[in-house]
Length: 167
Image 1: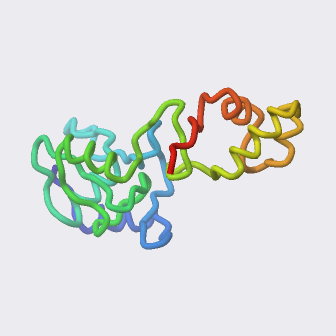
Image 2: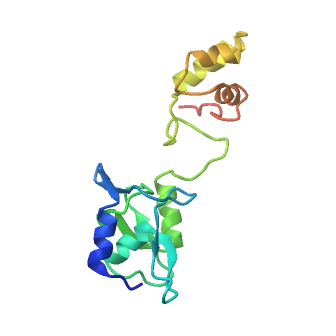
Image 3: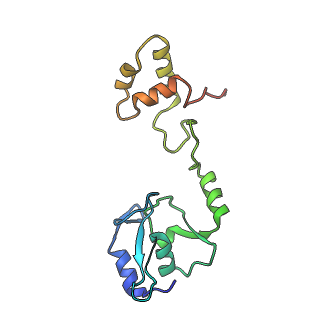
């Protein structure tokens, strides 16, 4: 990709918000939550939409070789800080996701999963209360902001939070 380095760098810098070392893109995002930007010109048929982190890497670090991906050390999809970006291939991306436990585990959650707000103590309390006949809606009121009635239902029916492994 060929860019007008100074103007394009300024364009990126003017569209970010610095948060915990990340340069978060404040404009358009794609459906996956990654920043996107339109580059090129209609005049010479080079106009296209690209991922802003790839654009940033091309401007601040180096050209991206064919079949290479630009990965994030910070795992922030909106980040375009060149210090948080590195090159890899598809397998590197998969390995990075697996090593950081960011893989989607359908119907399997435990307290080590990065998106989980509950702990085993709470899960066991929910199941105990339900086993004693308490209604899901009543239990859910005690955990507003942490979980929903649907989550409570999934917990008591063992759709999530499979039985705790023996220690």
